[in-house]
Length: 309
Ligand SMILES: [Fe+2]
Ligand SMILES: [Fe+2]
Image 1: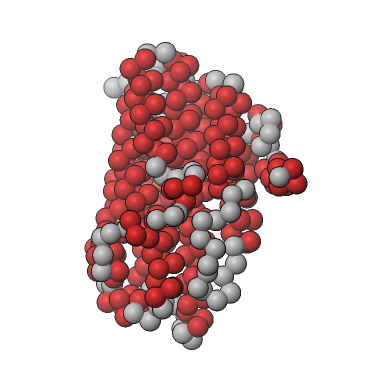
Image 2 (image 1 turned 90 degrees about the vertical axis):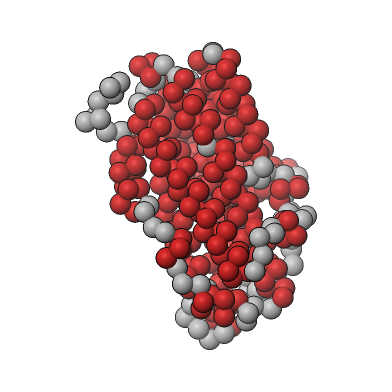
C-alpha cells in the first residue's frame, strides 16, 4: 500500500461526499409528465432548448471519453515529489468518470423518450463548436496528456496536466456547463410562467439538479488540483493557465453568440454573462489571484479588453 488513507486530502473527502450524494439513477425518473409538457413548447422553443441540450449530450459523452488519460498521467507522476497525493486523486477521478457516464446515460434516455431523437447534429449546426471554444477541445488536451506520459519529463507532464484540468474542470465544467444550467433555468422558468404553472419538465429539473450537484464536486476537485499544480510548478500559471483562459475569453466571453434569436419571451443573456464572469473569478481566486498577471481581476481585464476592441 503506497499511501496512508488516514491522511485524507480534498480529493478523498470529495470522493466520500460523492458516495453519499452521487448514487442516483437516471432510470428512476418518470418522464411521462415531461413528455406532455414538451408537446406544449412551440417549434422555435423546442429548437432553442434542444440546442442547449445537444451541447450537453455531446459534452457529457466527450468528458466521459477523455478523462481516462488524467488517471494515467497522475500515476506517472512521482507521488513523493508532489504537494498532493496522486493516488487519492486517482480514486476521485475513478468516481468522476462513472458520474460522467451516468450524465450521458441521462441525456440519452431523455432524448429517446422525450425528444424522440438521438440526433444532436441538426441542433449543433452553426453553434459554438464551429466557431470557437467547445468540448471538442477535450480530445486534443487528452492527446497531449498521453504524449507527455510517454515523453517522461516531469515538468512537461505537470504542464500537460495543468492544461488538461484547466480546460476540462476549469472551463468546460466550471464555465460552459454552468452557463448552460443558467440558460435552462431561464427557459424553463419563462415557459412555466407562460403556462401559468409552478414548474415544467419536472423530471428534467430534478435530474439536472443531481447532475449539477455532481458537477459542483468535479469543479471543486479540479480547482484544488489546479492550485496544487501551481504550487508544484509556479510558472504554470503564466505559461499554461493564462493563455488557456485567454483563448476561452476571446472565443466565448468576448465573441458574439452564434444564435441571437431567442424564442423565450423575456430571456436575458446579461445576468448569465455576469454570473459566468464570477465563476471564472472563483477559479482564479481558488488558484490564487496574486499568481495571475492578467486575470487576477477578471472583470477589470474583460472591461479593458472590450474598451480596446
Ligand atoms: Fe457531467
Ligand atoms: Fe463533470
